[in-house]
Image (tube, rainbow, N blue to C red; front, side, top):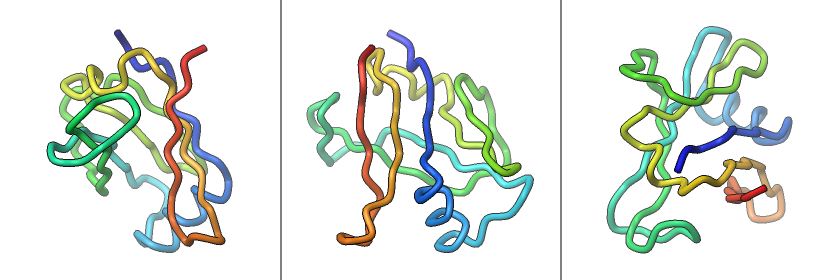
Length: 101
């Protein structure tokens, strides 16, 4: 099943820009990583990295000139869910929600 869309909140965008020193033209790749946990895949977690050389960008969203994307090889991880990314200032961390419409 395909990942349908990536939704990044304004608070999360600000966190990415400040924490990762992102600017217009940069790209953030979301990917699956083994040895973690997520509500959609047992034994796998979601990772992310600054990566300006996509190989096969399957799903992406752009905010203020910054692309957030998932490669075709990692689409399976989302199991048909949308990825909602937000920032929680109380915990000072990103929050990932997987939403199936």
